[in-house]
Length: 421
Picture 1: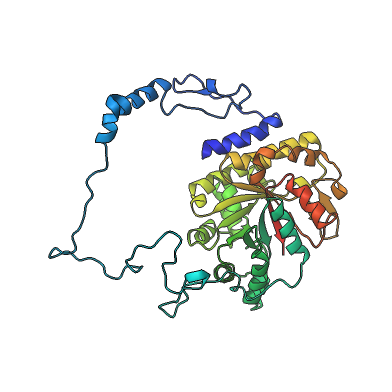
Picture 2: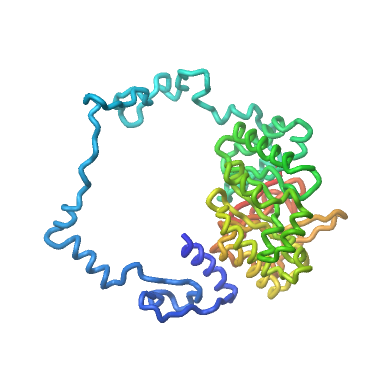
């Protein structure tokens, strides 16, 4: 898996002329001679078994008409005779104990596509089309964007904010509306909060935990099968071994405790954690920690905590809309902000903001106005080999041109789209 990830990243980086330090090739197990001449140096190829060793292994199993293969059959199974005195066997197993034909219903009441009858008061069948209790009234811009993106093979997430609804006591109602949108074909999941714990919405960590727990439970109920995501930042992870940095940032942002956020993942409350990277360039200046070092520190911490064992990790990048970039600056930004987190295994997906409206209404873009060409957009278009790992945000309520045009342009670069509800 790790080698495959490096290979796809390498294809895109080679298009941009990005190189890496050479690896030693003195190892006798090295098999780089089988790789293309332009394969990046950091892609490592090692024999699990050399061709000679593989031939010996094959001869061992195939000689004498496969005798060793036949002799290596399964061990005698361990069986329990339930009729023997002293043996206890369960009698409450599921099923009716009868063998059924392939495709035939094995539960009474499920014939001809009907619902099976439940033997208990608890529901044993959930109709995903009826569970939300809410249907889309007409084709909204968001619904149209979902339909258009799915038709182009883009993986869709619904982007919403449920924190305010939770605090207003309207979480259930808001979740049903989001679930109706997420019920469309092609929707993978729902991002239900952005900047979680970074703003003033929650005064205490217990309030924050209560929201995440309640929102997750409600969405699991009304949108079964959909992945759940949140966006936040964990500034302490970028400090590395600088204890004073960790202490200061923890005191400044007490809700962004790594152990607390890791708990959401371990409990299964969140399926995707999107870590913001906007603070990496400036938050650590007092301790002489630059952006590259902070990013590396965060990557090491994420791997050490094994967060990827519980959920998918993603990085959100805003640097491509900070200013109009030259081709050289865009290439460097791709190296630092996209390639680095993927290569460090700190993110499986990079969410790149391509359009930003500030408090004064000014708009900055990674592309030109109304999809005119720009150096940054041209460079992003070259990353076709890692397109499935690239995502961006889209708000159909403020289109660049129109929904169809915007989604078509975005789908040329991004394999995933977070559509604002």
